[in-house]
Image 1 (spheres, helix red, strand yellow):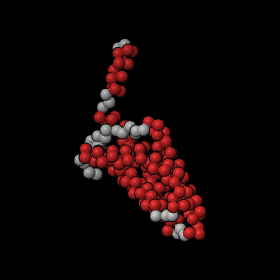
Image 2 (spheres, one colour):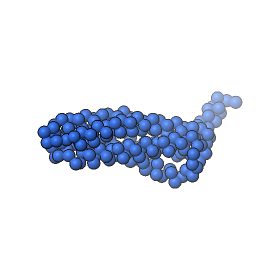
Image 3 (spheres, helix red, strand yellow):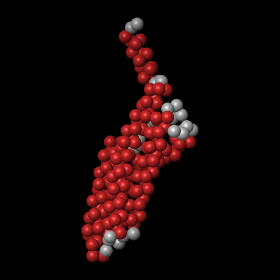
Image 4 (cartoon, helix red, strand yellow):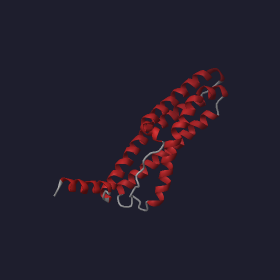
Length: 176
């Protein structure tokens, strides 16, 4: 067989991967997303606890300390967001697998874990915003830049992950 024929067959095989290869690639993609989300979820949760505690302890005489503590935690979350998703920020989208989860329970399990981590992170971020909204105008003004950055960073990624989870949960009938 000529080299060009072998190359043509290889190109065809790569262009149309078998379901097993596709499922493995989808699982790898999902697992990478889950790893990033899992780390992010832990950081957001720890920061949420500290922000809520600082907000609860806020008094008129310690507003600058409260603002500094909250701003530090928001910076921590923003840095984690950039670490988790910074490389895809310029693309404005994440390339999602089609998720042939009905064929592979491992893919479905990773999918469920990804959705759970995204939902928990979203709930924690909402709790942070609620805690901050109840503080004085001076504190809200002091942390406004970091809070705005947080909203900017979470909108394209977390919302797209949750949308992806909702869409694909309808397509994945098996339960693990």
